[in-house]
Amino acid sequence: MTWRERIAQARERGSFTQEDRSAWDNPMTCLVGEVVSAREVYDSSYWVLLNDNGRPAGLQEGMLTALHDGDFDFVERRLEEIEDRALQLKREAAS
Image (cartoon, rainbow, N blue to C red; front, top):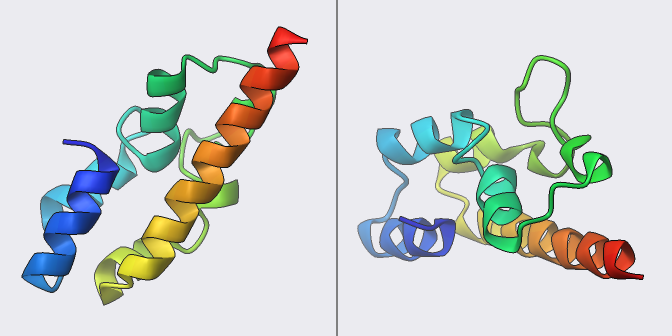
């Protein structure tokens, strides 16, 4: 399931699930991990969004609170920011 799908289902349900929070907590299925995999952006400058412990940081700051509070708009904005950053890095890599 993609994060767009998770957000849409959470809006319908009225909250994010424990599964959503667990997906966010995994570097491969968090918002950054999903976007990096989908866009095939493996530039090390993009991965700086994850701190040394492999925990989400940078553009994912505030996500856990948003997932617990059901702040769908915040999660969606963060996803859009991460997607924009991935596209920017992909363009830069192609130059």
